[in-house]
Image 1: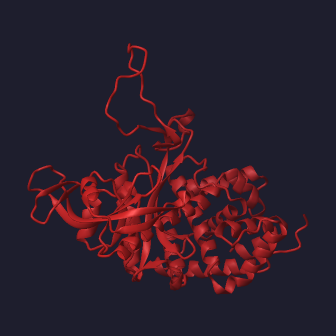
Image 2: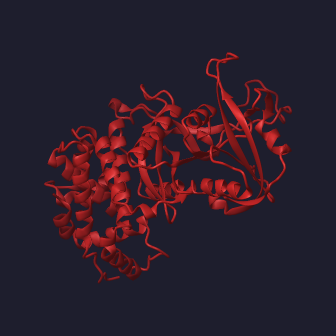
Length: 466
């Protein structure tokens, strides 16, 4: 189909990035990176939009004409050198750009609960087909173990065991099948329209010589995000899934008076105000009187009608195990038990007040907004976030930061008033190609740039490159 519509306001995207770069330079003390590295970085950002891929050969095909190279393979080698060797402090540079992007964002776009914005945190995994060793040491560096998507490990049969059904045993949580890969921990703000604004991220592997614990990496990401929030004058509510609802973290945040809503397992031991043990949280919730009904916004499963129970009690954590050596915090626990089906109840721990059924419903709504980060991961992984083929740890981390910045720039382009013309042109271009959705999203805007770029390479190079 002939394309008669073009993104004639493409220069406004470059103007937006230029303004963000100037603000980022001011925040980093005016230390200007090497212009050649900045030029390559901008080419990579544009290449991610155009190709929606992280494969260097694919990116090389898109930007080869903008570089003094004779082939796409030579361009890919130049990108590989940039990611592995170039002297560019990409993590602080990216953090400064994210801060500048937030400053340019309309505060009215933030999703809030009782005046407080929502900060969601969640790890995502990138399974990779690598054994951690290879010829001439060219394997992926520090690759660890992650869960294998959609599979569970089956128990091994003991050597010499008799055939037939296994003996009856107590029910236990099934082991999770694993494969090689990396873990990436992200934190970001929730915007209106279920949009995710990245704030902080860190790469993790259990084979890395200096990263011994995923828990510590998650806490570092959360700590960095909260420090930025304080600098921006925000007091967010932290929202996290079950893997982050650890007693040590819950107690530490509560003692710092940090508002949060975390999903937890109901096997936590509760304590009363007199220091007497009350038993497991599951038993306490089962004995509580139902308050009424609420909706559990469970993502792909759709809203579930649930009965609400609330318990307020203290929890304790001891690192040494000694009887008098512990820390304690009093929390509210909200349970949403589905009225139909076989799904396990949702149990939430929060420092927010829960005195009425409306408060409990509000806590359930706050946790439902956690799904925003999953929609962000869906878009980012559609751009090849987890399909990278670079091998060095630093190169992987840099490439993931570039994808995060590319995503954030288009997210900001959807909100900036002076880019309204570009958005109208993108909608017209997508409509002409019969790919227009119900609304213009980050992914659709990137698709429009990908449709416009092949016919206007020189125009994009003229406005985009420094």
